[in-house]
Length: 348
Image 1 (cartoon, helix red, strand yellow):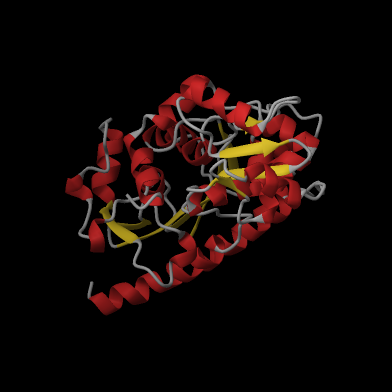
Image 2 (tube, helix red, strand yellow):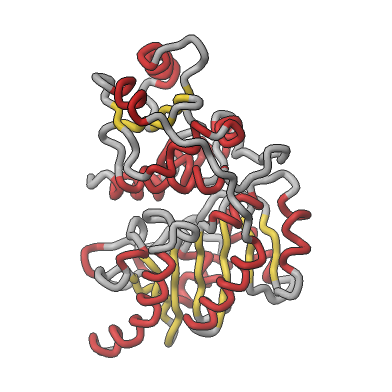
């Protein structure tokens, strides 16, 4: 394929990706990924890239589709090995979800971190609650598996049973497949309408007090005002401090979040967090007041705080939340593919 033909082929994918990437209810930061197949090649978003910039930046990596699929069937530990990757500009790596994109039979595959979907999929009764909403669609619920090959292996079993166009990933998000970018967008819009949840309104943050509390601590106010809702809404705060809800939460914000307890100062809370975990927390919740973030917090982590606020505001107060386990959290933090994304997020 000539360079011009390649650009023409990828343009619809880039346009659709950029539209999704600019909607925080679907994509936050470098989360999510898209792909398109043609002539035995899977073009998939590069790890760490922001879909919002898909029309301005080169971010789709060519991968030998049959080669990846053979390695999946053969049980390779790393099906997306260098032998099956083309020569993308800038040494880009394919998305950590490349095996999932290869496994799906559809020409176009979209994986989004849909806020509405995650709000349902983070509940212990998520599958039962979602089932009536998805009526009329060829869909399946996928129990949580670590992103990458473990998730692909789980999905492979489902696809071997019946055709599926929509996958609801427990505590993770949404994957769908279609014959074209336009069809994928229409399907995504249809699913989003089905799973839409009205968000709770949170009390306003006390910005004056937050600035005073942050003075001299190395913390600042978040760039997105929505992030304060995690601390000012009692229901969101209750869920936030009890654990991690989804993979990108762990990767960019760490396990759970830290809140200042009654009677404690910001300094005391930070000192305790360092003593227990060896480092200051990325975000600090001041109950009823608002949220502070480390001065060095990356743009990607800021997006994850926004996502957390949007998701929590859509989980009912009486819901039972299915947090990631300690082992699942540790597996994400120790995974080389996620360490690579963290390095990219921090410009390393």
